[in-house]
Picture: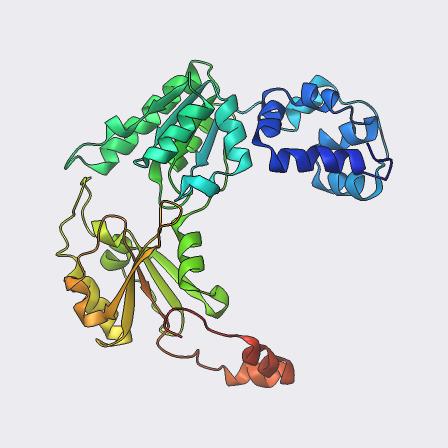
Length: 351
């Protein structure tokens, strides 16, 4: 072990970053993990302080104002391993997109409820927690209202939480992006006095930005497609526009294969008022397996109703033009504003 300031704590945290098993042991018993690593008193005090600034200080300088050993109550108060409900995402492609934090919590949970049609993600969850993994795909049914399915997922999850089991709810993608039951169950759990937390994950948005080269520096608007169609929404032709769940447009039920796409015609009409009929748009589906390319189809906006999107399709509309300058603001900021404007580059498959 290095004697340099903060080295022991840095190494302890770095090991958890690269070894999901180490993080799982930390989640299961943080005090025991710190003891096994033989962390010095200063580092232990910082680790269980729940204070990010103290952590930075310990990592940078290896010392704190107080090196008093943390009590069990202090460890629990830091929120290390006392969650009743943890909500995670398996990413769009489970291979490579399962974070170490997510793996650690799946391993440590008493019960893992999962919603995923990806057989690889399902197999990974069952490998990580073979005794406590349970699929909730049974809640879905052909032409069944999705709202009803979401209520069932929340109720099943809460039943386990109320029974005193450390419960992990795992969904595909990011658990907080376009996912109703994950937010609902966290609100319910907290309202009933349980500790609940959501962890970040790779979403379809992250995949789209990488695959299509979309740089949000020029502005990006993102809407659920049905929400965009049925409501008055501001459209900036100089910004990127992304419409999610285009394949299930205006259908409140679940379909296993293909949704009714009659809603595409009015959607295309709404978009053409801002972008024109010949503006090139893209139907995008992220790759779910390594070695597989994402599915990207392009064509003029007027032909969108013939695009036959699948339930996994996302519509990407590139900017039509450059943003309109604001003369008053530019005059106020002077040369700095012009330099900043020149440094903004718009990228994407249309460039």
